[in-house]
Image (cartoon, helix red, strand yellow):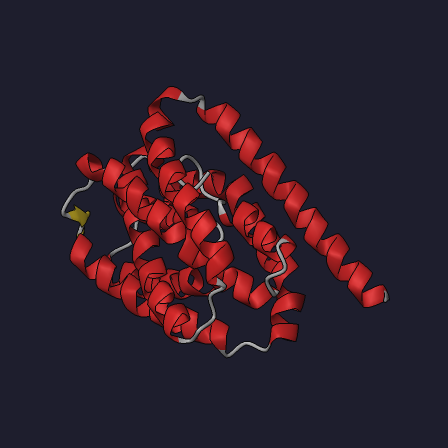
Length: 238
C-alpha cells in the first residue's frame, strides 16, 4: 500500500493493536516496522530521483524533514496515552480524507497557484513533524505541495515521496528505539514482511491499475477508520 498509494499504517497500526500493543506504542512500533519497507521502495524508485524539487534542492528538503521527524516523534512520546487514544480515530479520518481527496485538491491548487522556496521548507518541516508523530497519508500531502512548485505530475514525484517519508520515519525510529517505545517481538515480524512488500509494490507500480489500487486503498482505509470510531464510542459507553 505504501509503495503504490500510501496508507500502509491503516493496516499495520490496527494489526499491532489487535496483537495486544497499546495504541501509542503501536503507532511507534508501526513506524519502525514500515521504515525498512519505505527504504526498499525508495531504492526501487531510485532512478526517478532528481537533485531538486524545482527550485528547491533535495538536500534542503531532507534537512527540513529530518528535523521535523525528530520533533514529531518527541511530541508523540510526550502525548498522554488517553489523549492519543481519543485523537487516533480523528487522525485516521484526516488521513483518509487526504487519501480520498488529496489528489483532487492538489490538481485544483496546481492550476491556480505556484509557491516558492520560502514557503516550501517550513511546510516540509511541518509535514516532517506530522510524519514523525503519525504520518498517515503524509506522502500524498508532500506530493500536493511539490506540485505547486512547477506543476509536476504526481507519478513523477513518487521517488521523492518515498525518500522523504522514509527520512521523517528514520528520525522517528531512532527516537522511539532509544525511548523503549517499540514492542520488538511483534515489530520484527511485520518489519520483515514490510521490506518485501515495499520493494515488490514499487516494482509492480507500473503494472497495476491505478484506479483499482486507489479504490482498494480507500475501501480498506474507510473500513478501518469506521472501526476505530466504533471502538472509541464503545469504550466511552462502557
